[in-house]
Image 1 (tube, rainbow, N blue to C red):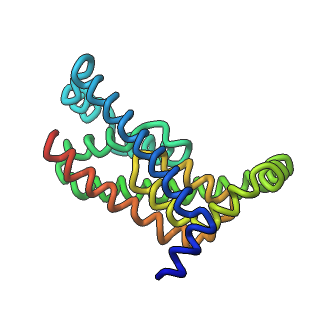
Image 2 (image 1 turned 30 degrees about the horizontal axis):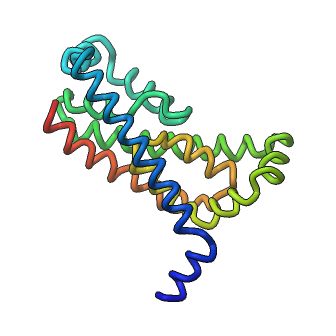
Length: 193
């Protein structure tokens, strides 16, 4: 254990972990503060969810969610988790959303591997940020778990993993934490909505 601790200090894993945790914590705090501010002053979340349920088919909402989870995570999954609370079988829809998010991440991973084949992108990555890529390959599991659990866009993390050629089997394993995130958020959101 002492040797492992020393290794982590020498390779600056703790610095990497601290930096990631601080950035993730700040992101969470900002997103929560923004949501509370908007909810308190501008939005009627219940009315928005009712309109979403009444005006759009389930299939179209699921397709939009998959696209969002594949391309930059433009729409927060929490909106869709709250939407699933309004369905007749919320836990089934939540599981479908978690599965689509996982599959969207896999698609983003492959988009990252395709992007790496572009010569200018490959040259930039290999020359300009090689040290960061080395660290991400070494500690990519932490990166994937943080992306899966926290409100960082999972698709961006997945895309980056594909871009740096992070081991795909390891990615698949660690990205399963995405399901845990959906169920934890589901427990919290279902009790409110």
